[in-house]
Length: 236
Image 1 (cartoon, one colour):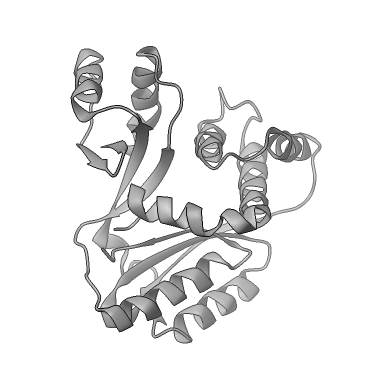
Image 2 (image 1 turned 135 degrees about the vertical axis):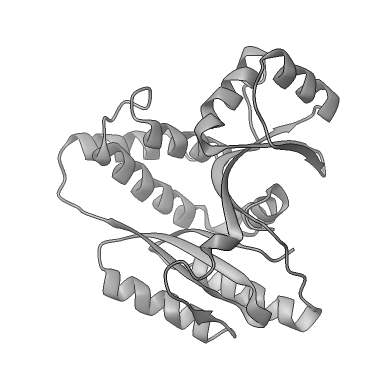
């Protein structure tokens, strides 16, 4: 399922009790994006991407503003964007994206999370070929036909539209992320349940109950690491 809407939805619900950890991760990512380019999201596409995602997690305005002001102030905190790849139980593919000020610490913690839960870290490129980069935007309280009409009218390119529970989710290429949002906003849709760049698996893996329990434990261990921003996988 990678980072499809159901996967994200359940993740949000499970972490509602620990919002401070989520906000801290967003604060770091916003700071890094703002420092890497212009602190104006209208100019800095990377920052705009992070802010769109932050809105769907209801990150408080003060946390966003504090991170951007911190970047403007020339703080000397430096973080490296690193990606780790590996396998879970029964060969399930996993990608871990992190922002770290200590690569040795982070790689050790990620490796431990894999090893303690039936997984194993792989080399760079060992599983990324099993995923395609994509952008996804989800809209609640509407239907597919209305969304399709909007997209066709706006001549907006997309790869797939599907309804998962009560949310219509549109998938497109990463470079069309903002064009997709703009098409929806122009039609009066300004609130999104999900709006982010993602990695979609080419093929899903189904695990039996015991394996699924172990796999979910590994994903939780990875996501709970301070330096880890996002985890993608191909388990249905």
